[in-house]
Amino acid sequence: MTRIYVPCDSSALALGADKLAAAIVNEAAQRGVAIELVRNGSRGLLYLEPLVEVETPAGRVGYANVDASDVASLFDAGFVEGNAHPRGVGLVEEIPYLKKQQRLTFARIGITDPLSTDDYVAHGGIEGLKNALAMEGAAACEALIESGLRGRGGAAFPAGIKWRTVLGAKADQKYIVCNADEGDSGTFSDRLVMESDPYVLIEGMIIAGIVTGATVGHIYVRSEYPHSIATLETAIGKARAAGWLGDSVLGSKHRFELFVAKGAGAYVCGEETALLESLEGKRGIVRAKPPLPALAGLFGKPTVINNVITLATVPIIFAKGAAFYKNFGMGRSRGTLPFQIAGNVKQGGLVELAFGCTLRELMYDYGGGTASGRPARAVQVGGPLGTYLPESQWDIPLDYEEYAKVGAVVGHGGLVVHDDTANLADLAQYAMHFCALESCGKCTPCRIGSTRGVEVIQRIRNGDTSTKQVQLLRDLCDTMVSGSLCAMGGMTPYPVVSALDHFPEDFGLATTAPKAAA
Image (cartoon, rainbow, N blue to C red):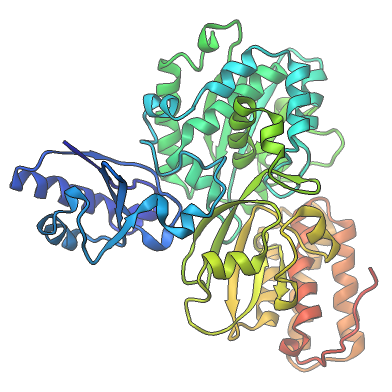
């Protein structure tokens, strides 16, 4: 019996994967061909979806961009034996886009059945949890610090220090909260984990609970991810049945329960304290800090808040050791990051690489250049509040500190490519408008600054390019950066100032436009 894989994640479903899977099953039945259909997760090569894989003695052979109408011709060509077909892409593991990656967090993505606990264990799952159960909390926190893992949600705060703070806090209840409110433009790594390898996130959260003494976890998922929510809820049920969750984790003295919470569509709830407010059933408004959530978080109790990729990376660190993970990356940016290539690009998808690669490498060696065929002009890195990097900055190593030196952010690893038809003044104005729409309204610099920012940019674009007007915009941005309560207002100026600095002609300005002091 031949095993055939058809992805079941949102990207493949949007392209007809369910209809395709049904067509393969029906065609096989009509022809009397014995197959086993497995709904795997996406490999992250989104430009090839739906990517059908056939298990052969030589490895899994792929057929890309398959439609239900292609199924009959695939069977005619003998694709069940891995034979040639116009849709064929050869051995999937040999596709350069995939082969050149350094997959650690995403090692199982697209390989396993996302909801099979047996598959997960067979591919190295639960080893990290077993090791964590044998460690003291303090030693486990030190191992995480030694690994160099920093928050992958954008803030890049050392995960081990956050865990150590919660471990040391005295309280009758502690929580683990996963921030899965993935709302940045061009980002989909969290979704891929939740839909293609949910157990790695579950295992990471259980480890966090055991290490810090937390007994309850919540995964806060944006409502726009219904497939992620359904997959997680099913996976949690199976993990509980397997003895990974409940009163005795893997037969130990440790207890841990896990629940899924659905967000309500507010971008600001990606900020950890606004997320906590929402999780408590309140309106998502940013809290002032201190106190830190690690000391007074969910319901006022000590809380670890990490994003999906941070928690999903924890199992491999505990399974293979801190030194193994630390061996990847550069400087203070250790390990790998899943870079998500989107926008005007020929080969969009997820690329996991060690820190130190460059935008140029990602855009051309993986992305294949622009989809339009026109020259790339700017890349926004780090979501809708990230900077626009011109070509002169595409060779800077993707590293938290190196990017900070030029006023840029790596963020969640999302890249949105724009070709030479893009108007950066228009995009800068949109960033201010986006902030005005999504601001929780608690602090004046964000609430009022974004609205005034839209107006000032419009005046400049309408022809008032005087030094006074440009300086007003820069001063306004400086106020927002310095005075906003959270990153919503504090980062909105990043795309605006970068567009003003590197693409002044789009604002109708001379290329020697005045720049704000550092």
